[in-house]
Image 1 (cartoon, rainbow, N blue to C red):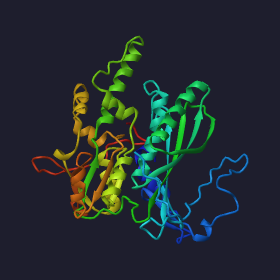
Image 2 (cartoon, helix red, strand yellow; image 1 turned 90 degrees about the vertical axis):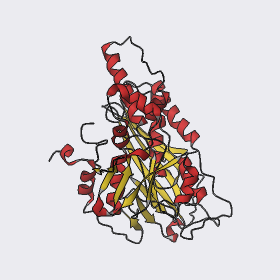
Image 3 (cartoon, one colour; image 1 turned 135 degrees about the vertical axis):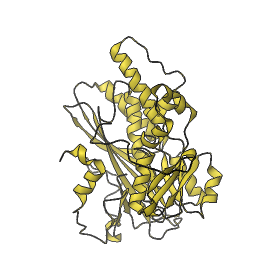
Image 4 (cartoon, helix red, strand yellow; image 1 turned 180 degrees about the horizontal axis):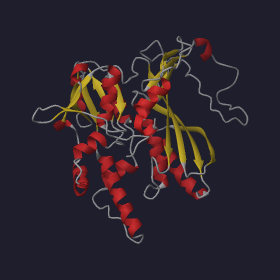
Length: 400
């Protein structure tokens, strides 16, 4: 069978269906969610004779130790997968959860001409985006990003100065979100540029949020607006075609700075995680929107064994997205449902918590509710006729 015929997520299920858990006391949650949760026994988290401030000589590894118990409050949070959460035995006295904190780990791989096109993506923007999309995955676990590692494979066509530009973007994103850049690897490539970023974050054990815990009648919410990144991609692809036909032409991006920035320089919604913490709201489920609203709500519904109703009139779309998509005859609703790369947070909250969400409607919008599984996942237009949602966003092994 051809991989493209099966699809990315069925492929993952097929490859991981027979994985055995040999350490059930430590492996609380394995493959199949946004995060795997590992409980580290207290004996493994005890301090060693090696100082955490003194790295091993000539080592390529980064040692991450659990935070020591202290009376000091944790660092204030800064300023959307395949994550792993590690529960540490050590806690702070300020922690409301006696079980301790979780460490969330996520990795994304970006491949030239698959995930990015250097014809129109500046290297500095690429470095920034490579970090940002990983931080978004950390946020999808209701966690705060803390560290990253970056590994690259690069062909001989790239100069030192080009790589410095790439790393300038990486460091810029780290600085903005107060994330420590702690290591990585470099090697050569025969096929352009490949970037792998691993991001780590922390969340208290009673606040970690998975995609599998939505409940019937929960309110579905989304941060920001949707479809803008896809609109920006259409503009860039159009200008690329014009450039290939006439290399002397200059791109015309007047009045479209917002959608272009959403495509080239997305921002992880760490501010939403901070707001939810201040409001004392723990979402019942959450995911970041990388593949389009339809795909992500289907992921939540499948993992939670529920259905979902999304109201068309409630989906937030920026006016510039409408304007940018008009020449392409693409409906903004289609871009919102299937475009992807918005890296907004899609989450559910209980009805008891919804009054708190109403205080931040400038940043978060209610767009629907969770239904019983038998009802399926549907778009609800103004006329009330249910339209079944289908995943038509990014396909890693198909044509996009």
